[in-house]
Length: 164
Image 1 (cartoon, helix red, strand yellow):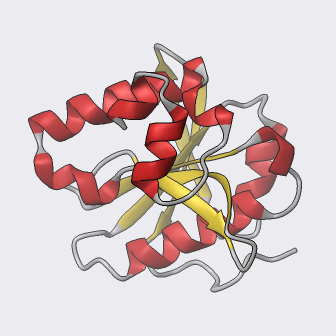
Image 2 (spheres, helix red, strand yellow; image 1 turned 180 degrees about the vertical axis):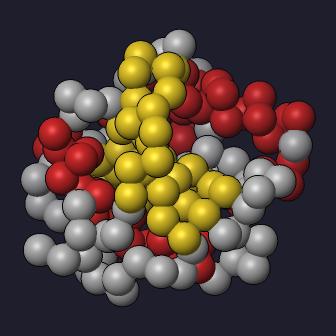
């Protein structure tokens, strides 16, 4: 993440063991890496929960990144976060990332609720969570993203595969 934050894509790719897309050093991604590095500095145990490269197999192509915003809170809630590199969008990768995050959350005894927060105008993200069983639970204001709708699902209660 430090190499990504520094904009050193070749070094970050070498350390990751896969070729990362230029999108990983774009401004939005770099803001994420800064937040996650600060988060890991404050709580080293959060490292296993945060964003990782999403690799499509068998091609071994990095199509984005996905993870949780952090470890479960005191209520057992984790929030998912995933991003697909623009040239790989609309190919099912976001749904695959979300399915894997839900599977991972279900395997963690401390996780009881999985949350997704989405801007009401983000039709692609709203479509991505459709069919997974998420229920709208309210809204919130995010200083960076503005108004977000809050969706939640009990961990382990979503379908194994999304409904088309």
